[in-house]
Image (tube, rainbow, N blue to C red):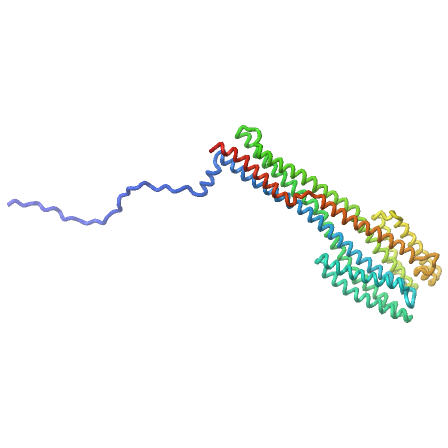
Length: 441
């Protein structure tokens, strides 16, 4: 028998991975690559210029609108703050006027003249009314105005005690009067001066802010024109066309807006500056002159009340009178004879001091001070100055308000047209660039 050879035993091995029958998967380009491709080549650069120029045009529109709102708002706030400043100075004037009435009436003794008493009451009432108006007009002043109102209550109470004692011929009345004057000088008027300083700073800030609008318009306009000019030049070199009319039209819109806006705002700034240096400056000078004049009048009376021991009040008179002279020069006070009226009063004051200090004629000095001496009547002389200066102050303060209002009214309506004009320029840029992009499709 023949033997057959047996097959070797089968062996098991773990199955391997199936053979791949597909091609490698290619990934989609990333978003970053897609954006980069969108800006590649000449069409891509056109898109970049389109975005830059259109965005800058819109920014210009926003800046132009902001510039006009800035100048218009500054003029409006300057007018309001100037009115508040005049209001505060009117409070100051009423207070020193009332004090001048009280001190001068004290010289009369007994029951003071009815018209002088009424003027005191009217001045205090006017000061109280103006305090209320000022607190409403400017919330930032409310706290100080409240403190001022409190000091005036104390002042008024001391004046009433001085009057009551003076009517009875009691010497303590003069002490109450000095105490009242101290409250006014040391407590009330420093608060008023603080309010004046704060409002003067506000007015100066707003006058300076009028010119800021010009900067917004001119700087943004020049930058936009630069971008549009670069865009037009680049297109001319790439497309061999001298001018892209829609983009050039957009540049013209920006140029005209810049010129019109810049000229208008520069003119407004110049007008505001002229108002500041003329009518506003005169208003401040006249207000200060009136305040100092009433202060001088009060010290004249206090010097006489002190009966030989009023050197401090006499020095205060001289200081106040010098202030009046200085402020009248600033306000061109020779117009309508204002300086002449003040000089007439000062001439009578010299007679008063000569009668009291040199001749020992206190009664004669008092007669001139209270107006019973008809040949040298300080009351009538001061009243002539007071009436004339009040009329001129009203004229100059009205001029400030009217000039600022007219300047605001003369501004073109670019405050609300600025953004639409910027959008128009941006659309013209998009239109002009799209014409060139179509050539690459």
